[in-house]
Image 1 (spheres, rainbow, N blue to C red):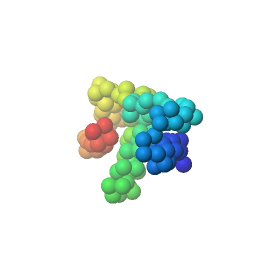
Image 2 (cartoon, rainbow, N blue to C red):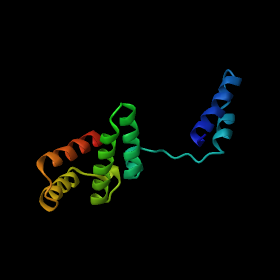
Image 3 (cartoon, rainbow, N blue to C red):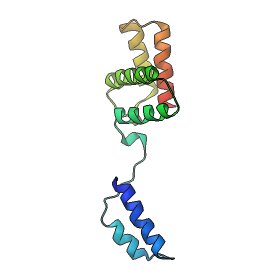
Image 4 (cartoon, one colour):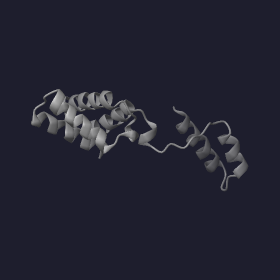
Length: 123
């Protein structure tokens, strides 16, 4: 069980036991935890975000080979830009596409597959 689940359980028990929980009792429970606000994607490292993305895609039923290719392209992109997911700009994506075309000499069909992967990931 993670800390969030444990905290939720403790607060729910308090709410269950009392019709109107005392604010101080809730604050006493919260005092055992260090709580920070997370704004989402920008707080996660890129590959952790990729893992979340692939987990969601697998639950949608994508093929194992598709998931493998998504991971391959997103890992390659992550290595190229070396930024957190929330810091990626349109220019980073354009630079990567240019790199694939001009440096790696990828075919247009391969580049389109990478573009579709990035569109799905960032969409």
